[in-house]
Image 1 (cartoon, helix red, strand yellow):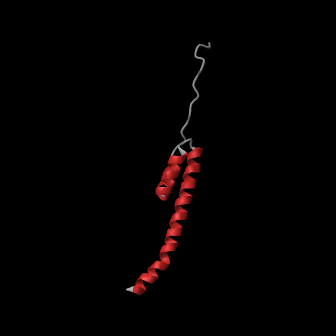
Image 2 (cartoon, helix red, strand yellow):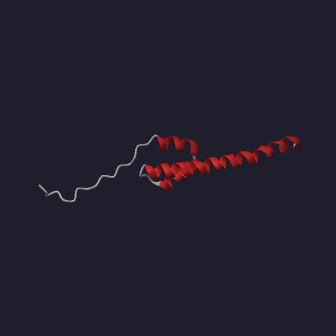
Image 3 (cartoon, helix red, strand yellow):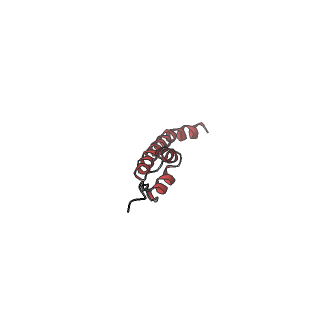
Length: 77
């Protein structure tokens, strides 16, 4: 029993480090892509940190948020 616990403890830090790296990369990728698409960088960065794979797929399938300029002078003929 003790032997099995010591063997499993050797792989846990590696898995935690890889998971943390994936989450940080997901947050960075999602926030930079959100900036390109005129979307909320903080929200997408948080979503990318919490669920990196789903968020990266989702943000890359989105279309840009287009901001149209208002016509200030409507009386011009």
